Image (cartoon, rainbow, N blue to C red):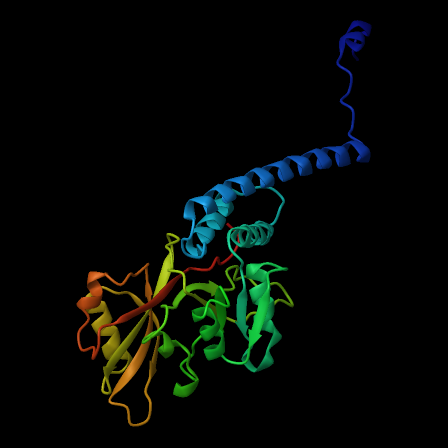
Length: 294
């Protein structure tokens, strides 16, 4: 049993914060966050001034790297997907701060899931325009009427005439590249769309540190998946998904090959590819999507 002197000298119990004080603390934190966002916007403005009349300020690789870095340092009770959602809105808003951001979406067979995933990535209030087919959306990007086009993921089951990616092999106007893959946050909560899409733009792709690239090849008719895999491996590529496609009566076969890493037009491995009928074309690259919690 404590003595009277111990009772007199013991510290007073800490006050339990009440709801009003906790809400006041949240208000202070909100003000601090807002101040930081305004300072960030000023830095973005200075970056835009340095570009003067440069290219569209689209940096999907850097954006992916920013989100990965934040997730790597993230801790506490806020779910990781919340970080992705907050920063996707922030990054899209600051991109639009530098240059008007317009997203063209090809709605395959009118499927609203494509619009939903585009909204998820590019922001709830970013202007979206819908197109009936990929060719229309790609043309709008080439004409400068859309910043990016969101297109269905190519598959090996689509008819040759329905595939959009061969149009990127031979282009008369500004070169269009694949620059991103959606959705970037791949764990899909119940009710969220799970369609897979690629994003194309007249801006050059940029590396994120963890990327995959798409190569388009023209090959002899007698080359199949196994033989093509050996040709790619001999040149130093680690290939993933491969789509072979040939038109009736064509002299060769087209191939769309996903390879590991960020590949550029001057990659020496491209010239090492054997049995190609024409020089390979790098259609672009994308940051590997995030697979889950950090």
